[in-house]
Length: 249
Image (tube, rainbow, N blue to C red):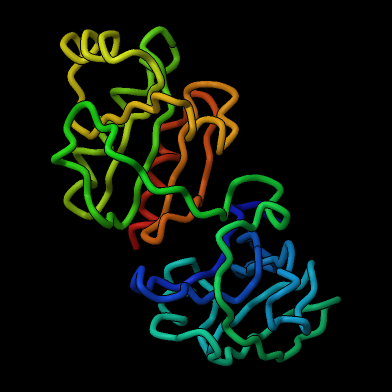
């Protein structure tokens, strides 16, 4: 099998309503030349008791699993309480089960073993540059935890600038997050202007909440503010590009 991302299926709904999901964490893989979703864990409060870790999902709500875009499309419009049929492969046998959509919790750390899947806390009013470019509800938001003195961080900046230019019109927002002093950050900006919003984490609340232990660290959020992917260190531009396209679909 070929390993892929860890995913949490949730729907894109208004922020005024609960976000429904299947209660499953799974990994996209290839099994016998077909794309499947290997179940990693099942949330204890989810109505998905018939699904077990290790099951391979091949069909959701009548739609064959081909990629994450197909999965999201098959669930679009469903609300909490809706019943979703799944086709599974378990121990080589094909099974049909039904899962009921439940309300999506904000913290699923115990399921994923990391901050992936958790909901990111709201930003305050600490933008120090390009605040006017901040989007109320971007389709994807990429956070860059960085510092002016960090050499690898400087390597990341041109990558982010290119991606921002490429995908801003499609709903991508990038936010640079640093906890350094205002004077230091402003001086750096004068020498290295950024095209995207810059945020000062003055109290390091964000860094502590998401246990940022090294910089640069990049965090990708979806439309509802849930963490989809985390990159410690300088990421490959192609990896970032692919992840962003998946969330924007």
